[in-house]
Amino acid sequence: MKTNLKIPFALPYITDDEIKAVTDVLRSGWLSMGYKTIEFENKFAEYIGSNYAVATNSCTSALFLSLKALNIKEGDEVITTTFTFAATGNVIVHCGAKPVFVDIDEKTYNIDSHQIEEKITDKTKAIIVVHYSGQSADMKKIMKIARDYQLNVIEDAAHAAGGTYEEGKKVGSLGNLTCFSFYATKPMTTGEGGIITLNDEKLYEKLKILRLHGISKDAWKRYIEKDSWYYEVLEAGYKCNPTDVASAIGLPQLKKLDWLNERRREIAKYYNEQLQDLDLIPPYIKPRVKSTYHLYPIRLIKYNRDKFIKEMAKKGIVTSVHFIPLHLMPYYQKTFRYKKGDFPVAERVFENIVSLPIYPQLTEDQLEYIVKCIKEILR
Ligand SMILES: *Cc1c(COP(=O)(O)O)cnc(C)c1O
Image (cartoon, rainbow, N blue to C red; front, top):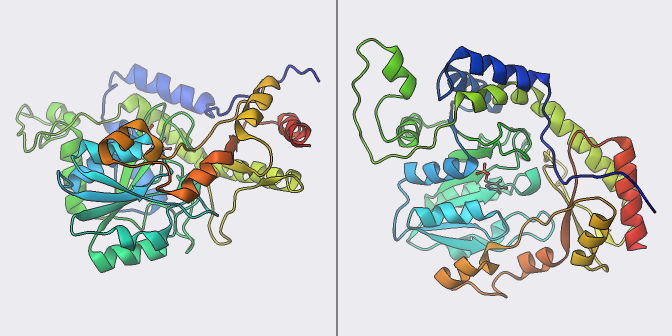
């Protein structure tokens, strides 16, 4: 069958609100970090229900600064899932620490909370939890383990802005530090960007210093306050701040976030209904969790995954795979002696998982077409 439909895997949702926000900030004359960023941080913290928020230039920077703020250093171990994006593991390495991977739960694809305790040693300092596809991990059990062993918990909530935990609270309020991504394909975007939400005042002050060269005053204060040329370097800090251009995009995006997530939940519901009689496993979401459905990953039971991706591409539909487990990556195998077979569940899931397009702009026609193509291929 011939069609002109071309369906990309992901698309940012940009309207005149974001375009006006950008032109306004460009005309204001202040492009680097300033009042727009402060406004965005305040609004984001308010939305999440956290005491503080620190905006960054990416979620990767947010994760890295969080580890640094917790003083993670050479010789330390940080526990995390193997089923995640490169950034989650890389930032641990950047601190000189060792990433200690844990296998995943076969239903939710989140870190298997029952396998965490056996990985804890006297070197373990923190756990990085990833809320895969926007569904929160088993935080109740993970926070209990963290309390029992006095570990810090960083949440990699790159997929989960606006999602909730099982107890109904918004993701971003349980861990010590929660990192969100505003990359172009994530639940909300600023082009590139990230943010850390937290409640601890000392960590908040430390993060702000680490984010901008380790200096004691933020850039706008240096220029705005009288006699404000003076500053002190308290640490060899980093350059991880966002621009006000990015933060200006974040403000209207944040206003839309609940709607964007709701729209994706509707699409997920449609997929769930339409795909139920096929040889595939749809995403499983725990009854009390609200997922953002950043991803809609299915597992193919009989059909070859790689062939499926090619067949879908022939029909103009782009799909993707989340994730190739980190312990299968050459760097992690070479450096930390991980090998195939270490995490059988993640390997089994990776073997046949594929993510379908899921974003608010998908029209009914496009969704019908995607479902029709999947049925044609699998039958
Ligand atoms: C996208 C992503 C990141 C990195 O986010 P950036 O904002 O691109 O740095 C980290 N972790 C996970 C799980 C991601 O999907």
